Image (cartoon, rainbow over all chains, first blue to last red; front, side, top):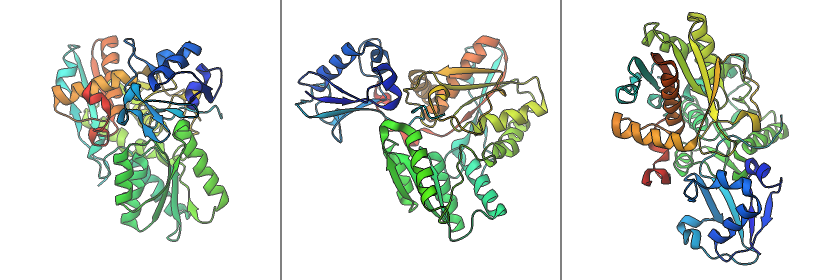
Length: 96
Length: 292
């Protein structure tokens, strides 16, 4: 199954996990399955009309899926998807 | 060269609340294109004065971009080498600007945001403390002092003392802490309002969600009369509105600043509300929100 890497600020909504294995043959299906498993992630990743929020970038390996086939980008066993905000905010880790 | 930026009026946005005037400090007009020229210059000058920065040292810091650009041009102009730690997902435009100035940079895990860059800078400094001058903008009192000595007095003079509300976002918190402290000294009745991203996962470059982040040492939450949350989407909307209705290209955190100021205006009904436009839109033109 493909894996999705969860950025630090979102782990609190994914049972603390940094990586989640999900089913699905495309990036869109994999993300859909991810938010089904961890419903608290949904509002952080999607807008009300179920589009990815515009600062949410998804990478397959090192490539932004926007420049592949978007949500229809094929994913296979062992592929790694990463969720990355498009620009660097400053909210991660709980290292106070 | 640094500071003395214009205080712009936003008549079309202000018109939503008759009686309110929303003003934005055009920090994109600093030589490095952002508000960060102020703290960078103050921290470098402070390092020289205290002997911590000497000609053979390299300036090292963690930055999501604008402070890095400020160190880059000031370092080049004064003859210092510069090394920066920044998240890999900082915008391409920023990385290109830094390369143009000949800066050496280390890209850190984008999933960790700016805190990953802070940890990397601390590590590099701990390994070779004699090689680097590490201003550490999150902990350096010269950062808020730059705003206490420049931004605060400028806003006071530019509004002829008529400012009633000051609004600024929290990143290192230097802008808010320094400017708000000074304005309160001029007139304790001025309300000072900070804002931060409303949730931990956001696209407001340079801003920090304090509850979930490494809290900067210079941050003093007791200064703010009120602390508000801003969403990335409202910032995008405002960036486009200000471009199309006011003819000014502002950056994303500046969009959040105007949106928050408008919210304050609606709440209080009238007043002179000044905020900080941290940078312009030039570094964000390839973001996808422009197309939506």
